[in-house]
Image (cartoon, rainbow, N blue to C red; front, side, top):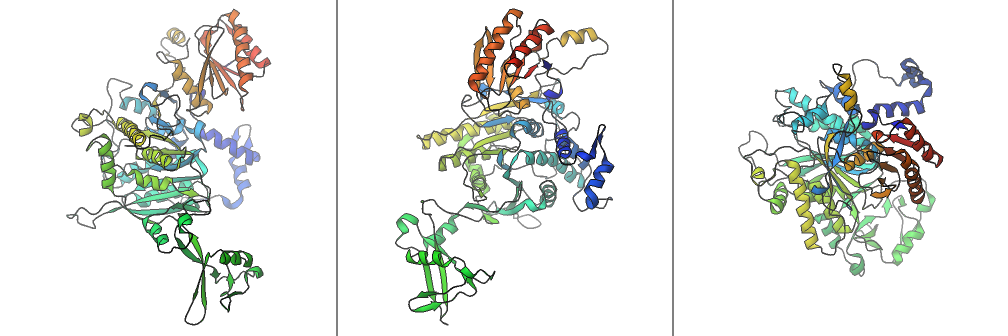
Length: 628
């Protein structure tokens, strides 16, 4: 029975993953001592970039920013059922903590699973922002900041210098987070990032580097307010930008029709209006000529022979069928030529409203709408400059590669007032979807003089959770028959539940005695179970079942992907019954993947007892038995 090590208590080691991937592709570049860079250079031929003069964005600290994205986290996410909503059934997550550490902790369980990400990061205005990465002890810094470690919380600010340092600190903050976010995305996933003029060019260059310029989908210029700032020295700014990137190249993207697009369909009506709505038209003749003889033909209409300019868009059979169904519009021009166009109805044959291409400019919704939305839910002036949930709902409703999908995971790791969560809930009500959200928010303290603090909110995380709760109640009141998911599981970032071996040289005897139990004092079995999920790479919302076997509490996680018995004492005469009970439960569940069983190391009287437990389980097909 192997013990869980310090490395088992870390998040995914991205460097090791990269090395293993490279080894699979280019095994000749590896020796027993590691990577042979000269061999790697030869295998890659002339594709190596030499010299310091390279095109791209660079700044002081970029190397460290890249390194921190690759450094595993030793933290964990501790469950808080008492502060959650519908803990036993919800598939939504609210994760309180520094988003850098949280993104690292999500890597094993959620890599390649997130459908869309929207973030509204702190804009670089030269003031404070509180994501100060200490590259070697980021978790420790966070624990001190939140008062979980040390005598007091500490106040941290990155923007304390002028000029270019503002850009440097902001980029150092953003780089590792965008890097980690990409690995969480599905191959057809989309990233949306709100930004203003101060960092637009730097942000685009940064994401181009991480995602690749070929995966830049577009940028939306969003008019976000009616007008303001009459005393400004320059232009009155009434816009922001939303950058959109895909993880891999996409073939098509569509969005819900806006008001103007809907009105265009209302201009043309025929006898199908009741079932199909109005229509717009699209040309059936094309100027391109690719020598497709089946598209080069003539048709007859009201005694006239119609020739295409070069060729038709459709085959003759398809065109004649559309004409017979009164789905083609003919218009004779003054010179005798014809315009021939197909009717495209608002609703397709199944009654579903069509989508259109996203526009690069949005006129609203305005910031005032976001402010009004939050004020009506949780009170006036509680949160500054919240994004309207309808703005995010617009992006989250996009269809990618013509695949209609009303499920998937939607992530916001600068969650703030949780407009993104509100958008997900509204979309699910609108179309009956089962989208899930993951919100990540730092517990940034509310200043004592603010309306939020006076209203009882200690930090921004509490505001976001309250907004979700009240939005859910409003949705249920307005839609009493809605049975969708309106809850969330709350987890809070903390140090690992597993003690790291860190002996005091001056008192090794005490260090040994303190380490007889590898678990941190005061942590619950539930704390340990959810850390095991994270480190095993299991979704945090999978069911956890409990059974009593041989007088011990045994947990099955994710339908048998993981079993755990954390009892503090297992006698020798209980081993066989306990092992056989776990085996029987394992056979009953028939998990699809390899099963791991975990025990508390100190529960066994000696190594012989651990060996016997391992042997019985291995004989019954469970080879991965660990202790902590």
